[in-house]
Image (cartoon, rainbow, N blue to C red; front, side, top):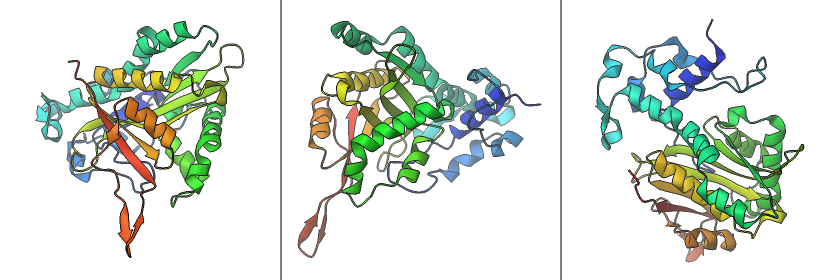
Length: 302
């Protein structure tokens, strides 16, 4: 019988060969079919990852070596992925993609310089930070707390745009198994969620669709934490984590009407990306885009 952790490992590793092209408010599976020929011919390719293991009280651990053992023959041939970077075997590609969330978690626990500095500068505001490597492992009550924050802070912006506020679709996006969560908790027995940042290791949009990026999907804080510099530190921590996982570009989406957030991102070095939608001119009337895609080039520390 295949262990749950093995199913989880195999599924996530195989998915790394068809990186998600999903973006906020876009539809479709976002797969790149031309990469399917790289997948090992294994029955597990068609399995679906369970949302959670009901028989386990702890989250299963992810080990890259489990999937490496399944690769044989031509799958250990050196290939150059997406036309850039060093030549690697599919096994090496899998291992790297599979362990990225784990590396971010290790960084958070052992060397989160930006967040540690914030804690020292704000002794009156004790906080706990937790990295959940996949929305699959997010507890239902924590997920609902995160969704409530999104609803409280952003639903009006959605309603005022052509996109509209669609709770069901938003929850589906937030439940994506590739979504990683950095939770901000209140210390103590309640472990109340005071904020979160969610992100995904994914691919850039045209004209740079072959480039790997870290895409920030959400960043939300309760009223008591806003305006205290925590959002900046969360983003800076993620930027450091991106570089340590060999990714040198971060991206995010902001509503055009959210001048405050846009100003913050610009101060942090973000600017309008080449793939951001342009304003439309209809019958001599300019219709502004509802949202702006912003990005930042990170210094390569390798």
